[in-house]
Image (cartoon, rainbow, N blue to C red; front, side, top):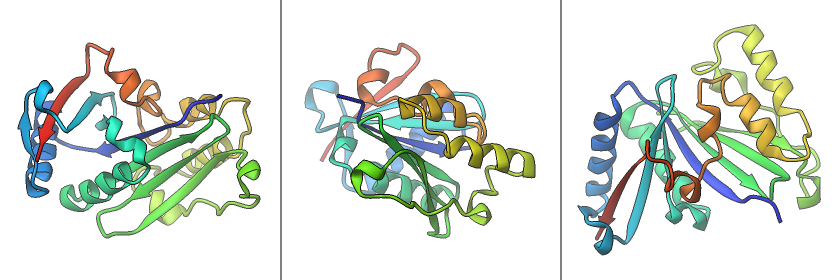
Amino acid sequence: MGRFSITVHVKTKADNAGFIDLFRDMMSKRGFAECSADEAERTYLFAFGGGGWATIASEWYRDRTSGYDDAEKLAAELKTAAVVAEVVDSDFATLKLYLPDGSMNVVWIGDASGYGIDDPPKPERSLWETLITTDEDWERFCGIAEKDNVFVEDTLYEIAPVPGIAPEYICADDRDLIENEECKAVYFKR
């Protein structure tokens, strides 16, 4: 059995603590208050790689909609780009880009034909160009996305640096980040 994971990556100009404060504000608007670990209904883990990206993982994201919802709201509220990396059984992955104006685009990586997706749509350069600015990087991004490695995670590690996401966090989920001493856990309850 392969890996299943969903991770949210948000482009930010805030420092680490500042970004977590912005996330707290978003959660407060949703009716959540920060609490201790033993009171928590939701736990979010934050990792910060180079390139101005914040990575968010949560057990809550395993329901397949929450991570996408958080990414869309963060992109709009922070007026930035957010990318959700979803790995499906290590066979294929999607990188779903959300922009502040509500537009989005999905890049398919790996072989999804076993899931009934034989001809996935191509990435839209006009949407990704806020993150991938040169012709050379765009060609590299598309070329990597078309690779069919045995494990899609290998392709994600290779593609992550093109938009500036830390490869070690591109598909790290809550199970990976909980053990990482550099990550910050924040707890919420209604």
